Length: 312
Ligand code: NAP
Image (cartoon, rainbow, N blue to C red; front, side, top):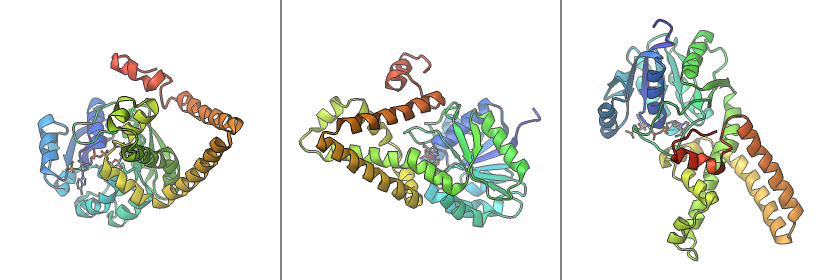
């Protein structure tokens, strides 16, 4: 096939996102070869055992040798170190991208290391699960999901269109955004919600009047969904908060104000306020379903999934 967007794709970091990319690239026949590297021997051994990529290298430098697309799939806090290591080994004309959940700090960390002639196009697939590691990836993770690109001004158009072709080939929809705006949007849609979930599960953990077995046995949908989010990878999320500090603190400040307002409404018995507020939030949920970003099936379609049926 001659119209594959890339010849050799190098994935640095071999966890959920890289693994899903490897499966999707193979399934879509989007590159001649996929190489990879992860920091620990254990992860590299697992990747070799399950044949996650065509070749696993012990160093990132070797993995990127001759690659025309390099994807940094490591936690946000590790991007600078990896970029420094691979920079001298990148070939002119290569596209360098990343999948980090925060964009401005990744640009600050990576851009200074990018050699002339290499096209750096920061990116973020809006898809994930609470699982991590080389065995957690699957080919359909990105299907119908957004993949945001935050290119710097003047980035080569042809390089951008090759990357967009790969993204489309993996089933995702590419869109462009300014990096700072991306970080604010994601603070609302992902980062603050994760912190709230971590906090709620932490509260239940500290509440001595409710026993641990009660929390586990009687966890109704609300708490159960918080526990799923709060099971997300600690390293990844530590880095997200440390590197999207300003936007997350901005949203958390607004969240606390709203929480106090609702707390007061409950104390004052202000039913109309609560009903009106919950009516508006329900409309947001409907909007997400109408946009095809979640299922309308009760309980997130868990019963359908368990029965092996596709979600609506
Ligand atoms: P993951 O499953 O935990 O995998 C991370 C990988 O990075 C592991 O293979 C790890 O190697 C490797 N790694 C860590 N530090 C490294 C270093 N210094 N040098 C080389 N390899 C290193 O994580 P993930 O969920 O795929 O996340 C990867 C990136 O995608 C993060 O930047 C995250 O913000 C972003 N992202 C995640 C999601 C999500 O929901 N999970 C969604 C969108 C974007 P070892 O196993 O050897 O430690």
